[in-house]
Image (cartoon, rainbow over the protein chains, first blue to last red):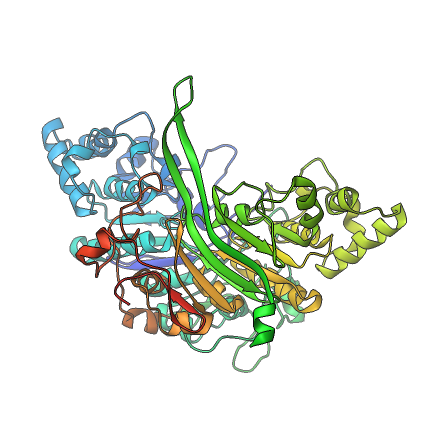
Length: 309
Length: 327
């Protein structure tokens, strides 16, 4: 059995942008998909936990009520716009469908709003694009359409799962700019999942770092980059080459491989790769605890004293 | 300086690669994709030249044409002062061991039905006459030098992680002791914490065996770290070529400037202060590139002549070339 996500807790305030960073297999996407039960059940199984949204537990809602929230109050942008748009339906249809379903708009009104949305995300000649199919768009344009669909019903939360990973840097910069602007205009809360520490640095208010199915560190963005407390975050930031300033002679690297998720986790997931590992780390799994000013870390090692906390 | 000029390992002169677009049962040609549209540069021995650009700009096609895996439409490639674009396939075959390639996706570039040992020793079968024992020793030595346990020779690629598979690909490229290796996005498919391991390995091997790299990537900060000089490519042409230090501290071409400003930096304080040049629109299709300067349609400072006249590939200072009217 794969233990993809193991007892993680976080909260999202109104209008906040939470960045979730981690390598592939860290459990980022599975966490967010399980919130809305988007995982195929079975084989996936949500063993325990709660996800409270506006006072309701999302995990206990029946499918009918959940469907009202999916795509309505909580919008989702997926990584690959090629596979997440339906290739045989027009952009216009895919955009108006959620609005007619969730907001009860008429065909005509939904169409007017869809054109406004395409304008909003910066698609030129929005009106004539309505009858086009996804293959007629470039990658960046498709991702804009995905954003427009996610925004269609004025969501309170937007979950963006690696939305710019498949795109080139200049196109990524365009998309990031659009999201920043939309956030100011519409004021929704965003969960931004990525493996790119640079993207998060420029976008997020708060950052959660995931490793091996756990959140290992969570802090406000400036605090996290200036004073990382978990050895994984510290090492990860050191492995990245700089774009400006002095060029490092040699990159620092983290030895070893990311953990296999097949075993029941009984030790700190980072322990085999950690160079500050203590005896305790091999037997006991640290829990995410608050250190100071909203800085939470799951680690037995104390960065100030170098000893067991 | 004399030594410098003699030290040129690879010279690319006006290299062009066009692919025909055909239609109908008679495969009538209706257009051409200008994947590589006249590029020229030189690589010195033991140097590390970075080639950056967005997807679809022709980086990988250029690599394949340089290694003669694809036939050039026109233009010449000189390797160790000998032209290799028009030599016979037998002569070319003799030269192949000196030029190798490391591919992007270690999943796709290793045969899943071959053991690690046979993957690495296959080039030796083709090009060398070694005894079984010698071959086995060489494979073990190669595995050691890329940081894998020699004990793994009888395992299959699926038993390894992405980073380890890339090491196998590197060992295969080293098998014939090449002088020149093209690394085509060798770290793009790897996790962040594994990327640094592979980059360090490539640097160590360069030091140890005196290799020359053409390092293709879209990761600008990694290129800055590993390269001595950097060439920036846009829509089939090189727009700027300079030493890594100069290019990053003082980019001249408007595309280089925009590209550098678009890279997110992993420092929130710095990131919020940076000025961004956001390019409008997408990269045009290489099947119908704009006339004049290829970048003119997205360039923030384009003038009338940029849309009509192709800029010359000019030398602006020693070891620095730019293709722009306005520099």
